[in-house]
Image (cartoon, rainbow, N blue to C red; front, top):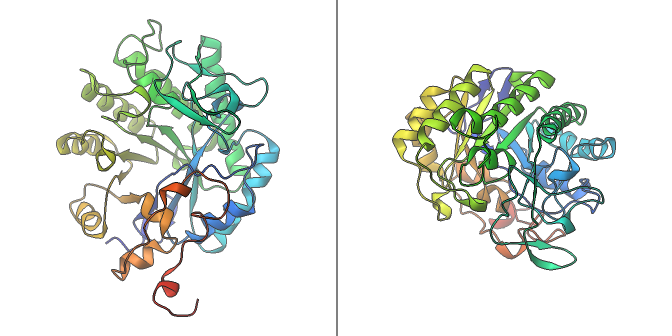
Length: 364
């Protein structure tokens, strides 16, 4: 099943493999992609679905150094080379829209931008900056109702710009402790207004961003990524977690969201998501269901045959293996990712991983 085509609404995907979003920190200081990024994604166009690295819908959302944005015409034009490279090889590509929220440092933001969050609580830990090295996260300003309205508009506008840039759709990043999940998690969101104080309040921003984005480009072009039980960036378990995420997924289903991208980070040390809960989310959602987290060919095939998912997303294996689909199909050995080059500028560990003919000694 893994290598068979699949249709999801109007999308015809070449196989059941998705390339998971992975931050690579390779764009220009103006947060615009370049030709190197087009090469990187084009090399991986054999994936049934490519989901790009997190891309900010506004200047305020650029929490890390050298991550892309999609909020002005210069960025739209720059992204066109990437979408064209993927489409030229028959691939399908979605852009992941990621607002970092409080996971940020002011040194990583453009002039005039600011760090925002549900409250003034600072993200624990440190973040890398190009000019100052490792620094504690910057204190965020608690978002007002006006700020919340603006961020919903930012997502909708960025989605429309994504269409102009040639993307096939967008994924809303509601995982890993970034802005949407900052509102979802009561360990961070202690607001007492409409955007806090209980399950409905904490789910409100995620559902309203999804609704605004769907209103801008259509439900058949919008997915969302979630990571219940994740522990990144100050998130973690809480008593109402199951009830809240079930309510959220039911709400997303009512919006006719194209897909739900469910990530389990237990392979990276986070608590495992109980299998019965993942199944409950799957049953609560009427769109396509993507599973991500530590899969190999055997476990991916089994998940598809058990109807636990429609697509399986691979992250680091795609990072190090531009021809991952072929390697899995042939049970060929995989390149080992070089962690030292995950976020470093340049071609090393980015576009220079060998493809299968090189590994086997055959001419490319």
